[in-house]
Image 1 (cartoon, rainbow, N blue to C red):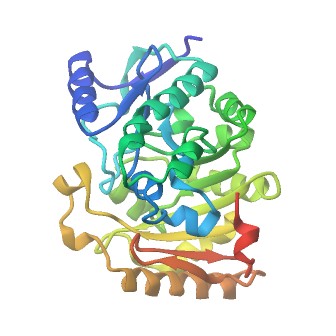
Image 2 (image 1 turned 60 degrees about the vertical axis):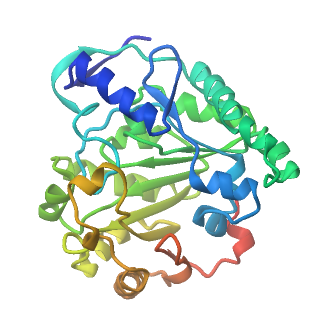
Length: 330
């Protein structure tokens, strides 16, 4: 499997940035080192019985059983709010030959690395041994760690491989590859929508894929019934928290099962591009989410409304129905 991809980075820059990511807790898997796994804060908390992430509250994900991974460290946007280093691993104008690991190798190595990463928790008296036993049998794969997963040419097969291990999959995409979204069937498909119009999109993402993103919104609508769909809006104060009606018009195209309106978090490399003031408060996020929900409800045939929230993560959940929590579980 040796498809070509258009990449713009030097070998020296690649190695330098990879070492930086490794120091930050990214663990590369597979022979070609384009895939990675990273444990999160909530995994540790979940193992200790100290709480769960908002995906657990909204969708029933148990953080200690979730592998946070990516099959592609590369991305084709340069979003100002991204926590990763934009200086490397970006798709550009210069060709580089890329050899990709197979889906079964990535899945096998990801599960193996996850087990290795959590092994140290076994010796802690703060760790629940019941939770640890569960964690050794991962149940969920969050394909959302870093980069854009749809740039991996075998994403469909990767999702299927995780499913063959009895795992659910969450794929988070920037929507720039609608053809890939047509063919994949994850348990839940996220599309990140970070602007209400093209002009703001270019300011946020420093890319020119707006027509593809609108096409992906159409694809999401056709995916309903095949997979659960979510549109996530990352709110950056002073940049894209404007024109809630514009967001509603775009959401009407996709008609997603859920909409997450979430604050930008002032972490990682984003701190070099944005001030802390760009991170909105939870109350501000909730206010903006309410405005979007009101416009969406009035413009569509569905009763969209806020159905849940997580203040610690500064995220609000909008749904087209008042489903019972148990019906949201994966």
